[in-house]
Image 1 (cartoon, rainbow, N blue to C red):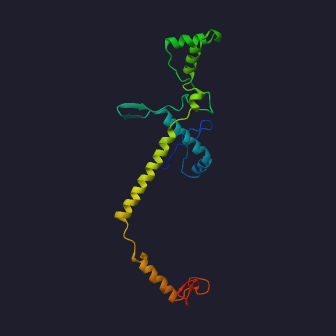
Image 2: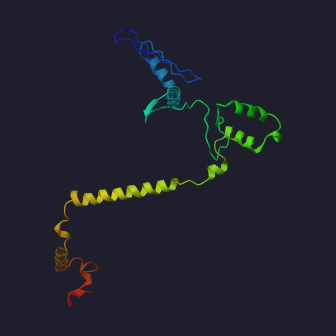
Image 3: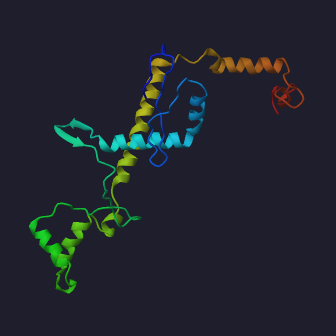
Length: 214
């Protein structure tokens, strides 16, 4: 977006929206008046949101973020390229598991084009491993991840209990004296003397003749 100095009589802001690709190029306004308002009204919120999302995805997919961790350099995956995954609900990924083939694997792929009766079980298994990483049996095999989850839950529960215990000992003040048993007994006696709620409430449950609860 290019803005000319405000002192000029005719300022131009170039902002054009191409209909097919949604590229935000510029909107032309000669005098900053009605043309700008009309052009801005053409940019609907939906098209602008689509434009911004496409720009963000393009920026993330074309730029490589490199970080150094434990002496290794990792590179961000390009989401615009075909991806490989092992999922039960999607048995055919976008690309084979092994893209870089050795000379033996290349010859095996050529042999694959012929009759499969000429392939041994080991060769068929090798061809499968070129295309896929795990079998369905391996994907369905239960893992021990639940142990990590349960252990993490108990760890945080125990840590939270220690924090609460520390707060009760060193942070929270002592309980007020109104929580003492002696004070509570005096408070109950005072309520009985004042005959609080004598019909169906507190005092109604006290037998004043016998001096005990009904």
